[in-house]
Image (tube, rainbow, N blue to C red; front, side):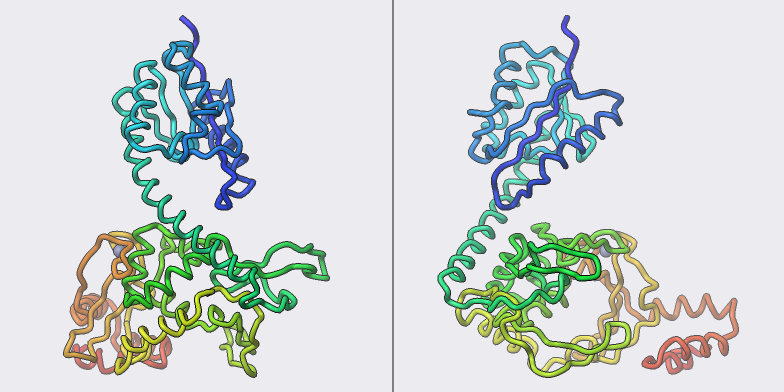
Length: 412
Ligand SMILES: [Zn+2]
């Protein structure tokens, strides 16, 4: 009987979504995974510029030829087909994908998903359908986004509104806008660099404003984006959170919606740093960045909705509510940060809750009354420490809070 073979399959399409690095990343993911399993990839097959959603990689590509060999029994049983992720194989409908998987099952070929480190064989192959359905939902979403950004670009090209092509000041661009091209020289900085709409982020901004205009709250928008696994601004720029996953925050959504950069490409020159405190310097400079929202009146309509929603409510973070445990507590479920909901308005009791849960990125539900947590912790502390020194430490630690009152109330 013929020796099983280990086949690596890479596919990349000509979608704008996929950068040129895709092939290298897939190959390195597969090679590493194979080494981890103690095997080497004996054959590579690749489909360049072929789409998996139309099935081109199967009808015309090398994958199609390989699958035909599988069907006709030319691929030895026990062979493995390595993919970086399930979507490299196909984005065809589950019924079509099912037929491919049945062929692989009959031929005794295992699929290995290198990114997940998961092997699927026999009946287990059909698990792949779950991944494909999941990704199809995400794909429909990003496709819709892609269409929106394309329309925005067309409007821009037609000269509706243009950025006057100012010198690029920073690579730390607003969400939705990227600094691209140019050359970098040490000591001289960038030259010939320009701002463009960010191909992945800009459509998200458009959708976000549309949701707001249609009456969704910043929190509802955060939940939607987190549910769709849309990368948050931090995640999109490759930053990592201390607590693991970077998620969309209600506050981030609100900041984006209020930012005039999306209306007129303007930016606010500032003095100082985020450490020493920033202060505005002069008027906003209009036209620094390309105008992201091409639909007239969208920014205003979204902001009118937001103001309606928040009129008469205290601005966030200014409620004066102090959290004794700021930065010290983590959600036991997801490791996310804990926030304090102020008890000052509408007769509510101040409570602590998981911030990720509020934004739809953690399954932990509910909150704990703040005074119960404080009482429990302070009680435990009082057994070990001198209340006077705690008080002194707390006073040093914060200028704002009313710990003193809290401690007196608790009778320490
Ligand atoms: Zn949580």
